[in-house]
Amino acid sequence: MSTFTERSLFHAHPKSLPVCTLLIAVLLIQKAGAARFLPDGSPLQFHFYDKSCPNVEKIVRQVVSSAVASEARMAGSLLRLHFHDCFVQGCDGSLLLESIAGVIEGEQEALPNANSVRGFEVVDAIKAALEQECPGIVSCADILALAARDSVAVSGGPSYPVQLGRRDSLTANRELANKNLPGFNFNVTDLVAAFASVGLSARDMVALSGGHSIGKARCNTFAARLTPDPQDPTALSSSYSSLLHQQCPAGAASDALVDLDVTTPIQFDNAYYSNLLSNRGLLHSDQVLYSTPGATRDLVNLYAQSNSAFAKDFSVAMLKMGSITPLTGSEGQVRNQCGYVNA
Ligand code: HEM
Ligand SMILES: *[C@@H]1O[C@H](CO)[C@@H](O)[C@H](O)[C@H]1NC(C)=O
Image 1 (cartoon, rainbow, N blue to C red):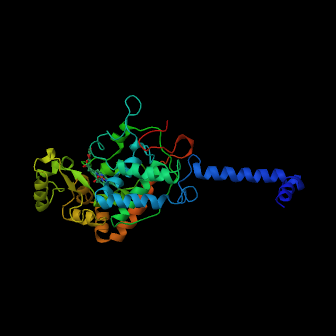
Image 2: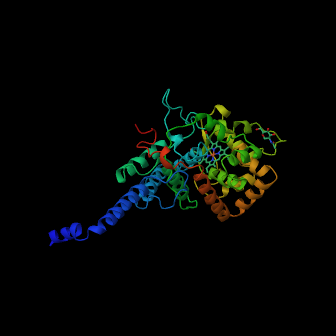
Image 3: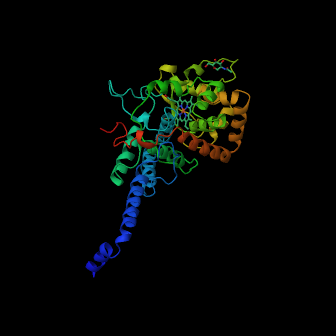
């Protein structure tokens, strides 16, 4: 019987053979192509790994949940990694590359990152779990996008679908990291310009600043604000100022870490914005959003009043940030280890 079937397939209809071969070839190419990478310049996709790694989102979520359960701050640290990745040559995992003398001048040593960015061991743990599940499929840049989303969600913030299909860079750019990442001393003009240079609006900037609803900062990032200047509209409220003096007894030299959101430090919500209304923004770049009259102040008022308006705009802005010049096509790769380009 089976012999007959085989014979009939191969011998009975010789004219259908070319059609069959073509069909099989097309199916094979589609399977490999869909799993491997998007054509150069094409947009990211919501369902990119549905066939090639259907459990990717579940696995990332599990590792992020357990990391945040053992240390709440990790949610902020992971969220910040995605931001600092995307602002420097796009969301391509460039931030994750370790420096190698004479080969790669990594971004982790850039001024805004040095002694500050963290969470790499969690990214490595996610990557290891995914390599077990579907080897060579999920990029490190996509891991950062998913981990950022889940960090916000497990901290009580909004969740949103994430577009995927980024590939990992073969390069990093420390100079660009120093140039593109906004500074804590920036005014509104500087902040708007920094976000505009990667295609994000002032509204995106104010919503994304709400990332400071979780996480911590070192004393030296706000120490200049501890010396009161009554003329300064961004001056700290006096009670908040005394709290910060206690937390940073040696000013900039204190190696303490201080919550960015004094009200609900590990809850992702709009309290960050109400803090600004009472001069309890930790960084200069936070407080200016409210103290500078104009569009950013109006948005701070809106988000302080409505957690759902904040959640909506934050989600939209995260999607926009996540698709800053994504690396697709053949110039990228899926790294085997997030810290190193494949051999
Ligand atoms: C608007 C311009 C921004 C400036 C000037 C800024 C600056 C900073 C600074 C100075 C710190 C403390 C770093 C340290 O202690 O060394 C920090 C921490 C943090 N930033 Fe921003 N940031 C900005 C926007 C954002 C955005 C867009 C996000 C995410 C959507 C974000 C998320 C975070 C988080 C979660 C932390 C805490 C990280 C941790 O605890 O490990 N920031 N930021
Ligand atoms: C903002 O700061 C820059 C320096 O970073 C300065 O040149 C500019 O005048 C400031 N703008 C305003 C409106 O204060």
